[in-house]
Image (cartoon, rainbow over all chains, first blue to last red; front, side):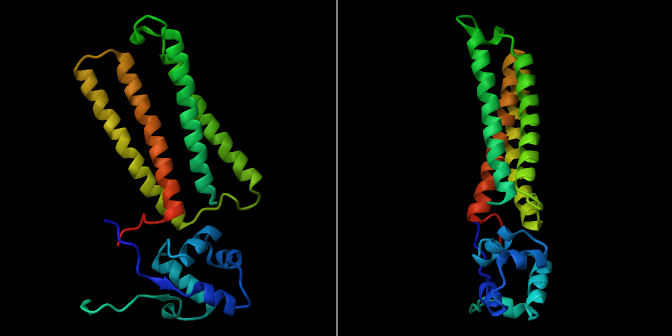
Length: 77
Length: 143
């Protein structure tokens, strides 16, 4: 059984906080297609660590400010 | 719609279209005689060749019509392509096994060639369908 990713992101909010940056503009700056940005925003695609860093760098924030992973009791530290 | 998703739709149309032309031609020639006696090789090769050329031409036409950067791909496209190709290849293996068994059973070349051709077509359709679903629904990544 394929488990959907639990990673959530704040890309949409960050885009609006950065002069309402369009998905196309973010895609150009990250070096991916607009469809990939849409898929990440909608939680249909989890980017690679490298792409995640590139997205965070565009917004000049840390990785944790863009992507979040829920705390679950019992998870190994 | 992603360029590669459009491309997958084109592949389904081209593959099914070419196979339909092939089937209509061969079945049309059969008449009341045995199907395995029909001349099929030329039609089979022409429809395979035609499908390849049609796929390439459609790909180029879409890239031109889409304007600058329309056919740009990224790592998500490559991941989806790898997963969908792997799914499609399973049908090719099944077709190869079927052809092997048919050859051992000394069935006529007609049936062996047609089993392989059908496997190619089903592989292309399944691979393209898997690609479209991956683009639309996600879920191709496992965690």
